Image (cartoon, rainbow, N blue to C red; front, top):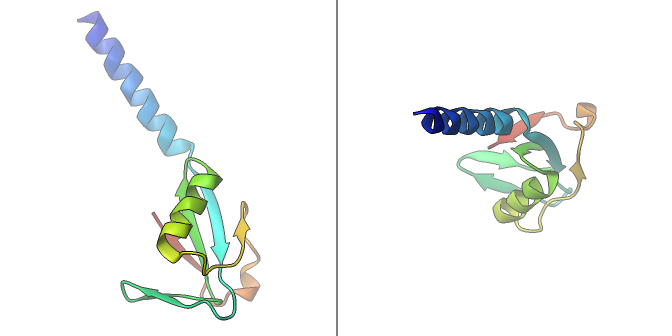
Length: 91
């Protein structure tokens, strides 16, 4: 009985830790990069935000979705003045 409660507490802590430890990583596209996925346009006028446990994990997801047709990676939100369509979140 005590062991069961200990396992449940450990599991809940891990789940909460993962929820709060996700890092936001931002990506932009070059002038000639345009993707349409599920009716959403990803191009030079938007920023993609991916939450992942690591920045490198977010980068892997970006390559899986867009191949090498994107431009820059940021650890902090870039200046949105240059991206009129704002941030598109991908999870």
